[in-house]
Length: 222
Image (cartoon, rainbow, N blue to C red; front, top):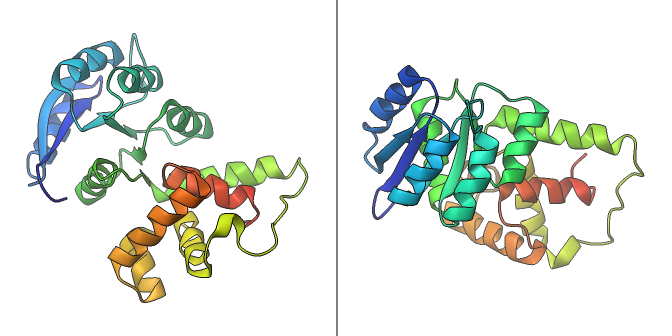
């Protein structure tokens, strides 16, 4: 990340997990923990007070769970980004969190580098899903598609995407990050980011998760 450190709130009902995350995040140069919360209700209050850039949100919590807390946080602070950090990666949890507005989804076996990358991505206005979560998302879409009519692939590239933009979109759908896409296509990361911004604009999606859904819906990914 560049510029000011991302201001982060950590939400988890287990004290040992909260304190462990705070200790881990304190070692990252571009992150400043500005608050913690033990449940969704407390998270909403802390976010309203601190206005953080990013919330690391657990899902299974008493009183108000992480999905409902995500909805309420984003209603109160639309500029805040939510990254789910949870033990659970089942379809219901993933879809519920993304529908609530989460921009990142990690499991608790993620390492410090992965958490830092997710914070950086959502702070920059992007999205980041754990690769296993992205695979589940695609598998669920494929399963749903088995009972419906096969997707219709439009002639040529959809929505005016260039051939290179379509290449980038397919690699996003595979779960590659910007650096990996740049390596695969022998272009710079800045060029990848430019292509992704163009893809988002042309297809009217807001993040990588929606781009994956878009790619599958049009039959670009099977």
